[in-house]
Amino acid sequence: MSMSTPLLDTIEQDEPFPRGNIPSSGAPAAPRAPVVLTPTARANSNSAPMASNEGDAESGIAGIFRQSAHPVPLFFLFAFRVAALSIYIISGYFADFVLSTVLVVVLLAMDFWNCRNVAGRTLVGLRFWNQVDEDGESYWVFESRDPSRPANPVDSKMFWIAVYSFPVAWIVILILALVRLSFSSVPIIVLALIFNFANAIGFTYADRDAKQRWASGIVSSNWSLPGLGGIGGQLLTGAVKNGVGRVFSS
Image (cartoon, rainbow, N blue to C red; front, side, top):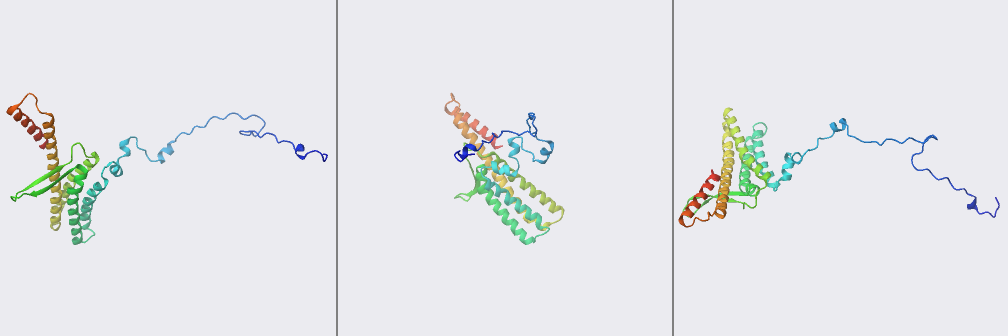
């Protein structure tokens, strides 16, 4: 190599690097079949079952609160009642009788107020109270939500379950207490029954009154009975309204 020849001209170029898989021998490699991954029975058995429809995915306590329009009032509706019932049952075995009695009475009073003033108004759109007029006569007043704003079906269902199921539970506890001759716990059970039945009866009549007023409003707005004027038409329209209202109130 002479000194006049440039250095770059003396360097040979590298051979082009082959792309793809390099065969181990000189023979060309056979094409491989594509690999298809399929789930096995072992993988299915170890994995958790998935919901096949929307109802299965939204089932359970978590699903109920997700579908609820008012989860906080729904939670406290059951929390007060379950806590009072649980403390009463546990008090006979572990806790002090006086302390547990005070706790149960406080929880029952909180549940009565919450159910009548908060849960009933927000979950089903119903409310009731007793009012005394100027003559000293007391009467019940019922309030209901506008029928154009129906209640959430999950909230309504869970509310009526709570209203009707817990009085039955306290009746069963009363029967067991009488069978075991545990008369010291009867007063607190009677108090629980009074609170629970007061709410159950009050909301039942409030719901009945709301349906009756809704039916009467539908009749008065749509069933004017055209062609029957005068006193006869008014009497017939009033009879239809009373009949429809009586059906919903029964």
